[in-house]
Amino acid sequence: MATEPLRNLNTGSARASTWAVRILHPKQDSFSYGREKQSTMHTFDCLLVSDDPAIYCGGALKSPKEQDIKAAMEKFKAKTSWKMSKVVFDTRAKPAFMSHPHKFVVDMKGTTWVAVLTTNLPTTVIPKTSITKILNLRDPSSLFDMVGLLVSGLVNERTPTTKNGLKRIADFKLRQEGKDGAVLQLEVSAWEPLRDELEKLVGQWVCIFKVEAKLTKDRRDTSTVGGGGQERQSHVRDVHGRDSAQVAPRCEPRQGEDETHGVLRI
Image 1 (cartoon, rainbow, N blue to C red):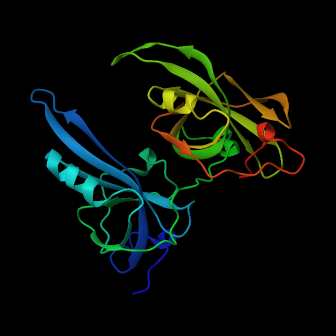
Image 2 (image 1 turned 180 degrees about the vertical axis):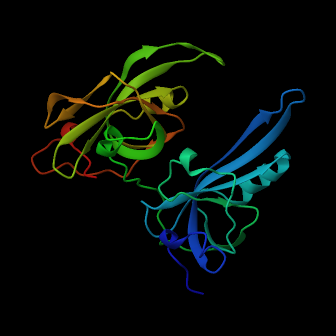
């Protein structure tokens, strides 16, 4: 049976077609809810990608039983390939809280899955969010996945008091090249444990998941354009990495540039 690319997945086509996807970044978690009587909900989350590493969506399963999530982790292992059909969406998932580019979350329990042996699907995702898009943000707050060259960190390390006690946070700089050839840098603040992940990846191409950008008035953002510091007005200044990071596929520097000055064209 022919399969559709993930870009064609929507509320109208979900139940009518079959989709070839690969599971990436599966993870298990839990959270507590309720005021008078606390209950625990266990969760499974992953990313689903088909033919294009820049177009991917989320997959999720929730259960009060931890064994259900353990079974999902065992079944939907990282980089396994599947045909999914009769797709059901998680209707409780809101696009405003999604960082992946295809704004759907597949209900892993309600959807039909058939394991397949295929090697032609991407083994990583490559989001296309640009620093320019973040600097031009107009929404009060948005989430993005983004990739670039992590050129520096740890900067401005501090340990503020949060509702979970003292937590370390530090700043890192991510570099990209815009369509107009301008080299831009974005300062991203990362709480631990993401802070610790990024510390090990400085100097490498990285993909950072769930980067949260917020509008803040009367602040300035300093971006590096053409190798020199050019200050440009932007209401976006609070940019935090909220989830995790991974090494991204290496992007070659332009001719005449060495590795430390390589840029990613978005």
